[in-house]
Length: 450
Image (cartoon, rainbow, N blue to C red; front, side):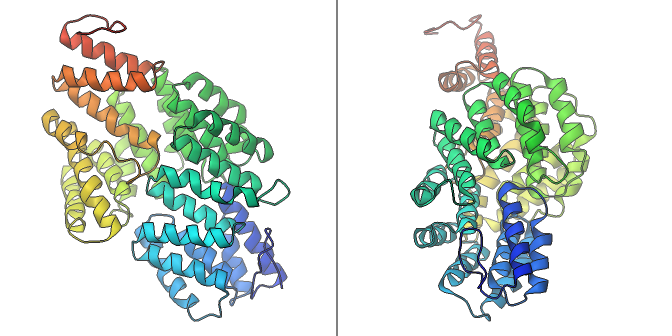
């Protein structure tokens, strides 16, 4: 019987199908190449190869796109008609929960799976991504930590597990260990975009923007390229550093040349595009007609219930494009979804709906409503939606709403909070100076009790 690179059995595979499967797995791990093409080739050569079908189902469901999620349903249903091993059955059970919108149950099922099959890197990465989508920082750290002792440097994929662990350490604020683990992972496998981006997060969270720019430049050959699915997100990090150091022209150039240029309709790319344009809007950069293209591409994915984090970013793009009727339609989707009981529906109710309303109010200049909506949803870590860096757009918008809406006391409090976390951040110091200016106190001073 053929086996994968971690020596787990690949029942039903031929030698050539197993090769395609292993290439698909590797492409998925480093976000390079075309894992769907490779796994489809494996399935054509060995139709009764359950792990190939399982991999494809994971790829589709983890895309957070309604059409692709729907395409995974018959695949998972058909797997129940195949002869499955215990490991394969465990994968299918987790996939079934995920397709029902029971993200946390699916994550817990994959956690139990990994305790029994600690070298099953597909289950580990699928669980890690679900933790990311749920913004569960503890699980982002602890899921790889639970299996790392069973790995070693002579097992293929070891560096990838280190990269996942690095990101989890960063999301739980263990920045020194995160940087160490991420750098080790990149040294072992320079093409590991996830590990590279874990280190990029450390620089951002510590306000080390110029070091971040240097990190991106030195490693650029490894995280860029037409076959690199993750390059758009790493360019996003690069642009965010540029905004932090005040180089708005370079940030906009990165958007035009590397984020907008490929016209991607992938939801994860559209999240980056929407969020970067919004950040540039907050610092008063003229974006001209850039919003409309992003809003057009969101039309494939908006439904209010698959993943409300996406719908909220679609609201940003449609606000920028001046499509207020479409904004109200998306808010309507979220409103209807929020009345149901599933986990994405809870996200719509607790986060997607108030965030969308708050950003719409901000765009309209209704800063009082924006403050009310965003103040109630800013603490969403371990609940919903991506990384700390991605969710920071909420606080940035809230602070701008307080400054523009005349609530300088609240703005000062929020700026103090940011400066306590990242004292060296240029934007943070600027927020604080602006709040003191609104209060008529001049420049802020250390221990100023005003």
